[in-house]
Image: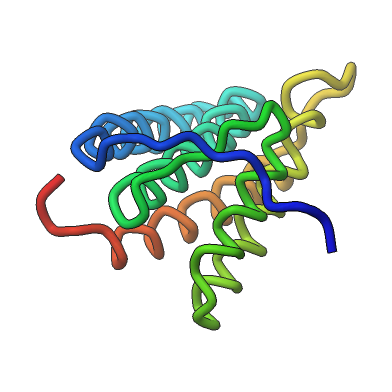
Amino acid sequence: MGKEPQTKRTDKSMAGIFWDRAQQCAHAMNEALQEGHWEAAGINAVHCAISANDALLIALRGIRPASQDHKDAVRVLQSRFKEEDAQKAAKRLGTVIAKKSRVEYEEKRMTEREAREIVLDAQRFMDWAKTRLPKRL
């Protein structure tokens, strides 16, 4: 087993900033999807999920991932929340993050199907995170 991913202590009052960012990205991803802008939908889905994860970790644990490797965000979530639903959500986050390079850097167009899949995973992750977040951020 590898060492614990690097985290950064973050004041819990900052969680609302990251949750707002996740909501803005979710709005943009859904609009892009409706407009047929598959890459924009995918990029915003990735950032929606990452920001929702940051909001959750900040609000409940007072930390956020500090690594440049976004896969470490999944490992932080897995290590800090052991419940079955959290492990399932972490897997979903990993699915979204695994597509980050595909969406942002590959010289290949994203298909409608790929866009719909990543948006659905990001939305489901965000919906799960919302059930865990304090009602007031």
